[in-house]
Amino acid sequence: MIHATRSIVIAENEIRWQFVRASGPGGQNVNKVATAVQLRFNVARCASLPPEVRERLVRLAGRRMTRGGVLIIDARRFRTQERNRQDAIDRLIALIRRAAVMPKPRRRTKPTLAAKRRRLEAKRRRSDTKRWRRPLAGNDA
Image (cartoon, rainbow, N blue to C red; front, side):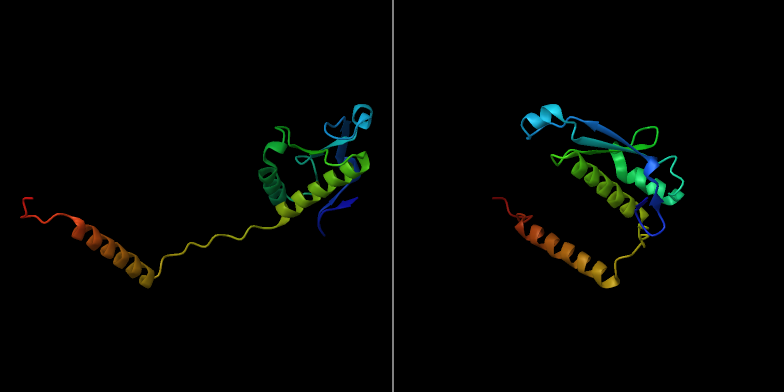
C-alpha cells in the first residue's frame, strides 16, 4: 500500500511496471541491464481517488496521461532499477498530493477609488507632457 495522503491510499496492484534499457552513462551496464522504469497508473479505474482529485490529476499530468486514462511516469535518473522505481513512486505521490490540494477560489476584485484617481492623474500628466512637445498651432516655422 502506498499512502499518498491520509485519505488516499493506492494498492500496489494498481501500478504496473515496465523496465527498459536506459541511455546515458553507465558503461557496459547500460547495454546489459534494464534500469529505466516506466510506472503505469490507471487513474480512470482507481477507486481510491475521489472524482475531484481525479480531474485535477488528469489536468496536472498533461502529456503524461494517455487517452485511456493511464498515467505514465518515466524514471531513468539513476543507474539502479530500485532507485528509479522509488523515484517513480515519489513522483507519483507528489503529483497526487498536488492534485489533492483544493485550489483557492479566485475572488473578483475592483480597483479602489484612489487607484482609479492615480491612474487617471498619471494619464493626464503623460498627456500634458506630449502636448507640450507639439509645435505651436500659429507658428509657421
